Amino acid sequence: MKRKKQKGLDFIVEKLTNSIENTSTGEVFDTEIVELTIKDIAQIKKSGWVFDWTKELNDKSKTVYKLTTTNNPTIIQGLLSIEDKQDHIFMHLIESAKFNKGKAKIYFGVPGNLVAFACKISVDKGYEGFLAFDAKSELIKHYEHSLGATHFRGLRMFIQTNAAIKLISQYFKS
Amino acid sequence: MGLIKEPRDVDFTVKSEPWTEEELADFRKLMKEIKSKKNRLRLPLTKSKRKKDLV
Image (cartoon, rainbow over all chains, first blue to last red; front, side, top):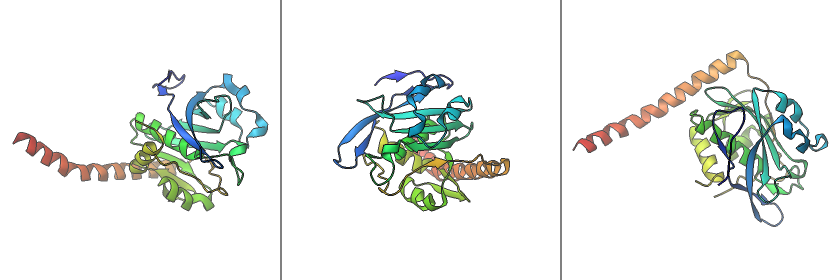
């Protein structure tokens, strides 16, 4: 397994091997998650994303990761922005690529894959998998069922140890 | 290995707003409670394992 030293973090993130599934064929593709820095901004075409990822890359308190298939690392399938809160990880943004949204999405599993990765960082950092984030009100139940997330209050949600371990084991081969 | 397949008509997107200091404090308190409860549940197993090891 390849290893890449990540700038701005005090640990080494492996190029983890996991996968996403083609919605039409059911074919499964191995994926990689790699940190993006401001130098990689050209990889993110503004027209393809709803959120302002340049802002995320410029914010030193946040770390941005891209998810790609192993055999095509130039096409970004999804993006994640997280912050180390010293006792948990805070998930600022998750967005799937335009072609992975809606009824015509090409791949299943992009957001789940990125959430599992954020949980893994939380475990690796010694935060026991705790991950906090906000959910749209209509998605709270969905996140409770699919991710095992816990509703905290209002739109606030979090993932605790058991759910984090389950997600990590679903996505990352040991 | 099972992937989490979001429904076709559901897009899992997260855009979090910063949590207030009060919310963070409450969340940290809750995390502490959950961790301590988890550790309490583990404790009897550890004790019995020690006894077994001594025998």
